[in-house]
Length: 139
Image (cartoon, rainbow, N blue to C red):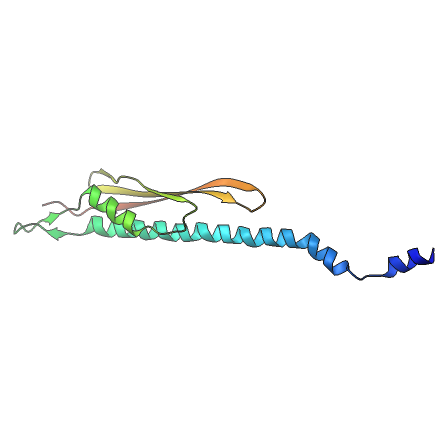
């Protein structure tokens, strides 16, 4: 009976047990923060690509002596956006073909990333960003 009382009062090793219980949860939260950080980085890359595409779409490149503008083609705009997009590679970017209706162009970038939380897989996150651009009159 004396040995049992002695063991009950002995607190050596309690910190190790508490750490063993809390450490996996702490690591999971920290890794989750990194996953969310990757999404924020991808969002910034998408916004940058949209800005570059919008800038190119609104440029007025002088037409040969006519005083008008040569508007960039959809292929040039998409290529500029593909070159400007940035982010970490667990996900994939998709730059849609620009859609033009009545001198208004819609630019769109989509990012898809399956979330991973070390011990279990998370949902797939889809981010879509769009920008409407008003084009300069053609020559």
